[in-house]
Amino acid sequence: MKYVKPPVPIHEQIEVLKNRGLLFKNEAKAAHYLSNISYYRLRAYTYPFQDNKDENHPFITKVSFEEIIDLYVFDRQLRLLIFDGIEKIEIALRTQIIYNFSLVHGSFWHLKPNLYKDAVRFANHIDSLQKEIDRSNETFISHYKDKYTHPTEPPCWMSLEVSSMGLLSKLFQNLHTSNEKKLVTKHFGLTNPAILENWMHCFCNLRNICAHHGRIWNRRLVPIKLPYNTLYPFLENNKIYTNKLYAILCCIEYVLKIISPGSTFKYRLKKVMQNCPMKQEKEMGFPEHWEEDSLWK
Image (cartoon, rainbow, N blue to C red; front, side, top):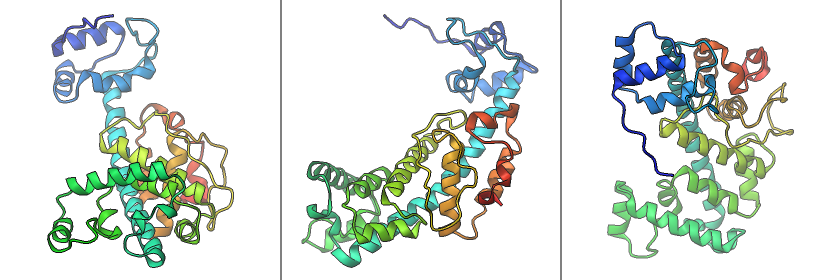
């Protein structure tokens, strides 16, 4: 089938939405929003309120354009908060992995195949790491290349500092279970390295969505594993959807309490959630009275 839909002027976009049942309080203001936030981007926020099996996508819920904008703004505030929290976690993960493995296996441990489970994946990951090093414009990378001839690759604390979180997650997952891996896991209040592997993957996935300004409200995420044995108190109510946002927020808060005891993440989250439009907490997996769980007190 050939795509034949033409581009539509903003005033016609408003008419289309009105004909589908979306309410408008101020069409001039709506036109201003649509000139700065694309119709297609906002479609992700109107989608749950429409009959999408009907080719005309009529609204089946009474909702206004202004409420959709409120939802969009709320999602942005939540996204910025999450990105800030994951940044701290990413830096701590990178630090702990580099530190614990380098003390035992040396400055270039990340290049040793015997430390990894799968040789093919290891080779692919190191190839990806090399490309990231080559793309890097960090001064310390240039300094190493200018001063040293052997090894040609920079040490782990330089190389892995410029790796993406996704690549770091893949490298960690492929490492054999060892005392070093267990020490990294313990630092983050967990007892099973497989749980930390999963958390790193989930954090990375969510971080990438945030970094590309993607929608996180009402999104189904990579399921996160909830641990049953942690070094510090975790959730009291663990009967939650592991593929919804609330579950991963709990894991973020748990880690932040350990690595950044003065973190204000939970207070800022509560403040943002106070402005959650149209009672959409449930769509993100938040149970009733979630703030009363000891994790959030």
